Amino acid sequence: MNQIAGINVGFVLPHWAYWGGLMIIPIILIIWSYSLEKKQKKAGAGSTEPPLPSNGFTKVADWICEHSGQIVAFWTILAVVCYTYEVIARYVFNKPTIWAQEAAYLIFGMQYVIAGAYTYKWKAHVAVDILYNKLPVRGRRGMDIFCSLFSMVFAVTLIGTCYGFFRKSLAMREITVETWQIQYYPVKGLMMVGGILILLAIFSKLYKDIKVFNQLGRES
Image 1 (cartoon, rainbow, N blue to C red):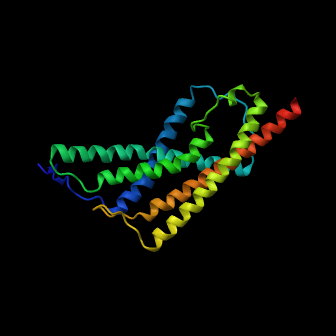
Image 2: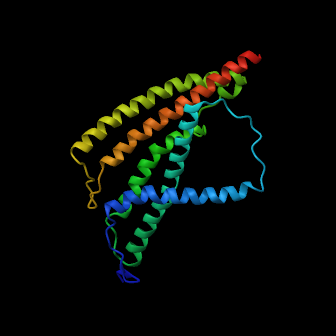
Image 3: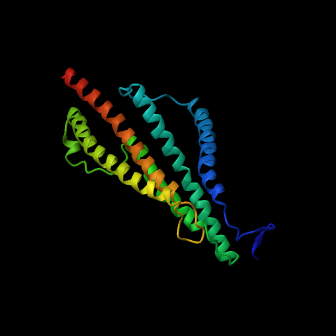
């Protein structure tokens, strides 16, 4: 009862396989999804919305934020696989793992921070827009500029705080306290990376909002 097709269900996932899978598998899935998207676009019409102002920096920043969000989005699939394997091993074969729950837990923690830039780029964060919706178009852009300045304070604070955590964790080669004992410093390092990505998204959006704000002012 402790084996599936000759494979021991109670095996321990190697650390290198965990970190490698988090990077390689999402890239493969992104390439596959893009190939499917191209086939679907051949029969559809393009977007009619006017492009937002951009420059070399905003294009690079948007590309990084877009693809980093896509990578961690596919981590959800890996987390579901981990939990599914744990449930089968525990309740069907009475052989609970020592890594599946922690693997999924770390995935969701890293995903939460890294996906912040992608969410910011698409204006998908929760917002209280009672006043915002009553403003004219130019007023909304002005409010976006004002809010971006406060978002910068949050992003810079996040980067500085996580850098301190990461430096201490790396110096002691910190590992988790659970039985799996996987490296913990990459998690804290990715928290710092998430803050940097959010800051990139803020700068990109701020540039576009300022350009549109000035353009609307000239038109009026």
